[in-house]
Length: 129
Image (cartoon, rainbow, N blue to C red; front, side):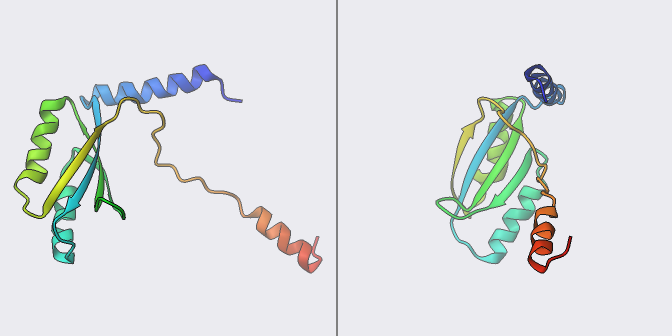
């Protein structure tokens, strides 16, 4: 059983780590490209990959083409980031930003479920105990 205090402690520790490195603000940025040619997309991906303030980048479906998660110490640093990434890029049609108000859950762990239930079901089907 995990106690609420230990969860709050872990959450606080994660947030304090972000503050320690000076990245106090998190941004979700949806980017719409002017054209979706492979060479244009690859150029954009390389630019994003080389930008240390962008933590994650996803090529997505829907209204936008890319979803980015970026961090900055303040709004001024964020404005410098978007000027570097988007304002001089003629292939960026538009972008929309949401500022994260609270980090409710932050994880990159992928849950791995045991396959025991699959093997157990197969054993019952063929009569193995």
